[in-house]
Length: 114
Image (tube, rainbow, N blue to C red):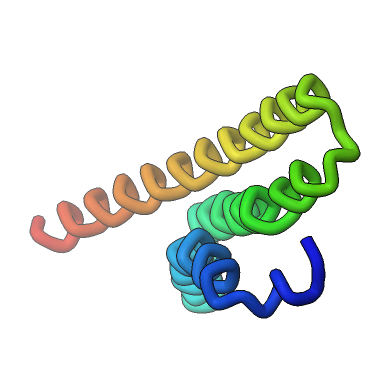
C-alpha cells in the first residue's frame, strides 16, 4: 500500500463501511455508561471497541501485509486465527452485556407494572 492508496475513495469507503456500525454501537454503549455506570455498558463498550480494532486490522493492516508479501501464508493464517479469536471474545463480551441489559430492563419493567 502506498500513499496514493490511502486517498483512494474505494479504500476509504471500504474502511468506513466496515467500521461505522461498530463506532455507532460503541457510542451508544459509552452514552449508556455515562448515564448509568453499570457492568452492562462496560461489557458492551469493550466488545464494540474490540470489534472496531479487529475491523480496522482487517481493513487496513491485513491488506498491507498481503500486498507487501513480507509474511508467508502460514503466518497470515495463524494471524487470522488469533485476530478472529480476539473478535470472538469481543462478541461474547458484547452479547453478555446485552443479555444483562435486556434482563435487567425486563425485570425493572415487570416490577413497575406490579
